[in-house]
Structure formats: C-alpha cells, structure tokens
Length: 127
Image 1 (cartoon, one colour):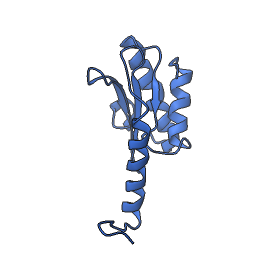
Image 2 (cartoon, helix red, strand yellow):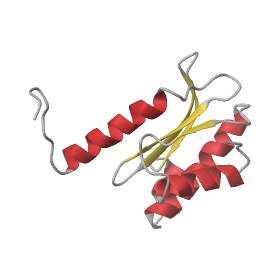
Image 3 (cartoon, one colour):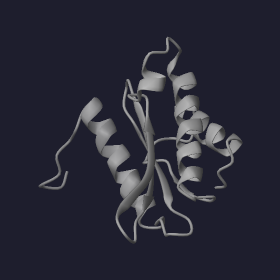
Image 4 (spheres, helix red, strand yellow):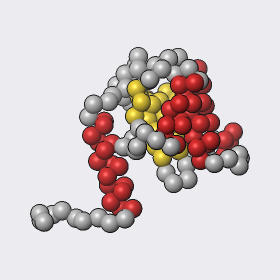
C-alpha cells in the first residue's frame, strides 16, 4: 500500500468514485454558447439538472425536484426525473437553446439519469 493513500469504505468510497469519474468526463466535455452543457446532479432523494455555458460561466436554465410544480407529486423518483427532464428542456428552449452536451456527472447512464435524458430528448432538446 502506498503511503498517503486513504482507504475509503462504504458511501465515502462510492462518492469518491463518482467524483473521479466526473473529473475524467469533464476533461473532455465543455459547454459553449452554441451547445451548452446539461449537467445532472443526483442525490438519494433529489435530482437537479442545469444547462450551463462554461465559457461565460452562466447557468442558462435549471430544474429540480425541489421546484414547486414537481415537489408536491406522490410519484416515484424515476417519474420525478422525467418531469425534471421535460421542465429543464422547456426552460432551455425558452432561453434559446436547441442542442446540449450531456454530462451525467459521474453517474451511470441508467435509471433516473437515463429517464431525465430521455424526457429532455422527447421535449425537443438535441444531444
């Protein structure tokens, strides 16, 4: 074992692995004015999606399960992710965004992440 390497266990190991993957992804993905970055942040309870122009450092549109229109619903987390995807696509189109680069944030492209992306595509955003 190398010195200076901390061995993590449980959730700490999982969060560190997600952070490593996100850093590796962000080396290749960057949002521009023509194709901003749609970044997804997922926790155990909530999901947040933002459309970001990395060159200016501005958030163009965002949606979350904490929004008033989604928060009151008694649906499962995948259904809420679909609602967030449709809402962020609607807000992005209102801001003049037609195409985005998808940033899954180090998470696997499955479950809630895939549901959000599919709903955003159905609402008219191009990836």
